[in-house]
Image (cartoon, rainbow, N blue to C red; front, side, top):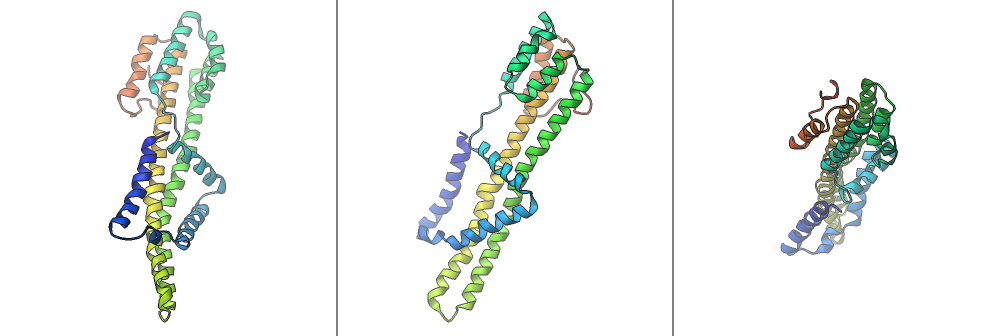
Length: 261
């Protein structure tokens, strides 16, 4: 579990609730089902207008990675690639056929199979580039869904506030109903801001960070596989691959220009 995400959510909501209590307010004042229906329903509706249903469902599933995520370790991947390079240099590329079948990473396994099958390096590069580009575009949509929802929520909150004020204006003669209308008006605005700034936008930011990590892993895999196919010295391969981690995610690999020499 990503402790930072859990702690962040607790602190974010806790700060709002704690501030309300410190000011002498009651927690019940923040619990307004009408405001919640307006903000959540309106935000989801606006997001559905912007994205297909399948994109929204995929984004919701991807949000789980903000809480439960196994960190990608470039060092582990580099170790595997160096192992493949040593084996291929000693016994030939064909000996990696069994390794290709047992690799859990589908992207790495696919690339290793093409290398073992003796495909042209440019063809291997082209296929892996397409796979990487498609993966990146799919994952970007997940972040964009939450980013869009974070933009809609505060505006929907304002709509809820206006509706609450309309309700107040229509019942000025009935003082017993004024409090409820005013409460919905202000709480709807708070809900909109909280949904946007504590949930949606932070999740979008975290998904983009995850995507950068995953792209880095695949860039390392491409560089390593092409070097293995060329029969390069495992020590030189290791030095070049470690350059990816030393630059803290700045990709040394140029997608348009092929692998390193």
